[in-house]
Amino acid sequence: MQKQTLSFQAEVKQILHLVTHSLYSNKEIFLRELVSNASDACDKLRFEALDNSALYEDQPNLEIRVSFDAAAKTITIRDNGIGMSAEEAVAHLGTIAKSGTREFMAKLEGDQKKDANLIGQFGVGFYSGFIVADRITVESRRAGLKPEEAVRWSSDGTGDFEVEPITRAERGTDVILHLREGEEEFLKTWKLKSIISKYSDHISLPILMRKEEWDADKAEYHLKDEWETVNKAAALWTRPKSEVTDAQYQEFYKQISYDSDAPLAYTHNRVEGRTEYTQLLYIPAKAPFDLWNRDKRGGVKLYVKRVFIMDDAEALMPVYLRFVKGVIDSADLPLNVSRELLQESRDVKAIREGSTKKVLSMLEDVAENQKDKYAAFWKEFGPVLKEGIGEDHQNQERLAKLLRFASTHADEGVSFADYVGRMKEGQDAIYYITADTLTAAKNSPQIEIFRKKGIEVLLLVDRVDEWMLSHLYEYEGHSLQNISKGAVDLGKLQDEEEKKKAEEAATAFKPVLDRLKETLKERAKDVRVTTRLVDSPACLVMEEGDMSAHLARMLKQAGQKAPESKPILEVNAEHPLVKRLDGDARFDDLAQILFDQAWLAEGGQLEDPASYVQRVTRLLTPA
Ligand code: ADP
Ligand code: MG
Image 1 (cartoon, helix red, strand yellow):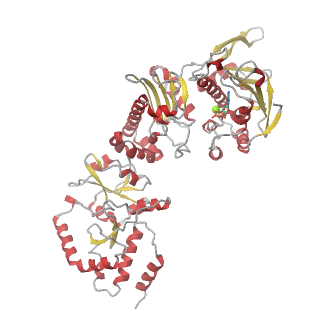
Image 2 (cartoon, rainbow, N blue to C red):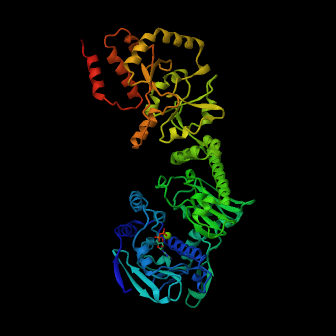
Image 3 (spheres, rainbow, N blue to C red):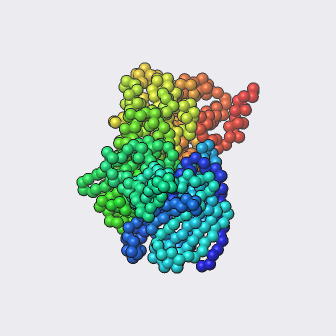
């Protein structure tokens, strides 16, 4: 390879521009990012060396060294990790492999504070060096390559970078920052030390700096050739709880999640017994931008006896808890465990079950003791948690208690327990209705009788609700009833007189009903008299066991096939419009309009709107 000048990928240029022009707060995080890359590089070496111990060469002790040269105005971060080949340097430091760049830019542009913390969240941490440096030089030799196969990468962070071959005896990487004018504050031992202890204390490798000595003659500090470890070098989760402060737990969370908000809750435990592991798990307060992206990275990191094995080990957490962050360190798994092996391991199954229970306990605790916080959590993660009702039967009951709904009594925050507490005397079932929007649900004709009687109805308007409730049949012995399905059975909630009246109406109304059935036979499965309506003349319901109109619509919108099941038309025999049907010359028009309007009130779209309009026009035009 010869010396070459190459151009950054367009996205990198944009990022560099943003980094150098708008990240003013939290500049110091550049050191955290570069130390974290150095630590990752050591983890990677350790991992590759599991199969090929020759990669250690004669240096099995992995470490990071941070030094500076006040005269040259440089800071150097050195590691003896995996290193980079020339091709890797070009690929990793000149392009961005991960998705999310656009979100990063959008977030940064919208962010008033221009918080540099965001940079690590999007996997572009290396470029944060350019916040303080106007040139970065990287010298690296990949483990296993010859000294002559090393590389020097260099750039001023505008449009281009250079790469050239060099000879380098040491394995690993030096990142040399040539500080910008005005950034001299970072050329001090105490300053660098304090940044390291703030952000990188938990890094499990030693971070070394040169010792300093006071030179009384010159009245200044003098750097000695001796190095000392400046971090605790013990992974945070391996330390006893009593020795870790709340601030340290919070800082560690920021490091692994790149979330600038504090977590909602965390739990740190050492589990002993048949399988031994340590868990440090966090529930974030805010959803990440890629919550709905199922291939997103992050989540729970797996360590085996303190050796980093993999990020986002999905086997350790059920999918519906994919927002949980943290570390699980197992004492039993083999170091060379693969993702496939994880899926089958009984130890992993035990870890997953144990960790799931811990997360649920944390949520229960917040729901019980910090209601506002839980409400905020529910807004962010409620829809994800609902997936658990269908996916995790073992914990279904606990999850059901964590659910929150809107209802005819309150627009949000209603739990099943709240609902049950407000049930009317004689009420057995929990009533709910599904609809596209809260307004549609609130105004739906089906709930009129419930309103009149003051019976609470849960209003379910989230996309996953209907699916979720197809997996949940009851809550503490109370069956869950969709009031837009089947005939309403108010049971003891209806008095004898009402029941009798309804029966009489049905008999008296029979001839009209028969005519309606005949007229609407293409559209309605049945027509019957109901007592559930108060102000509306008619409504549509699905037969028990048929798919609700709401779900059928959602499936169609998503381009999927939905079974064509006809609804049942229920009419309010007390309503003037319905009473008028008998003997009216325009019976057919009225019947069709009755059906169309019930359909519209449900949130449906008419298949033949023109005919509907013609019929209404005929009615409105004096004969
Ligand atoms: P991330 O760390 O999220 O991957 P960065 O922008 O921090 O993103 O780093 C980009 C890539 O550059 C890393 O994934 C890695 O491949 C490479 N890299 C950076 N620093 C080092 C290092 N010290 N040793 C080896 N590779 C490194
Ligand atoms: Mg990084």
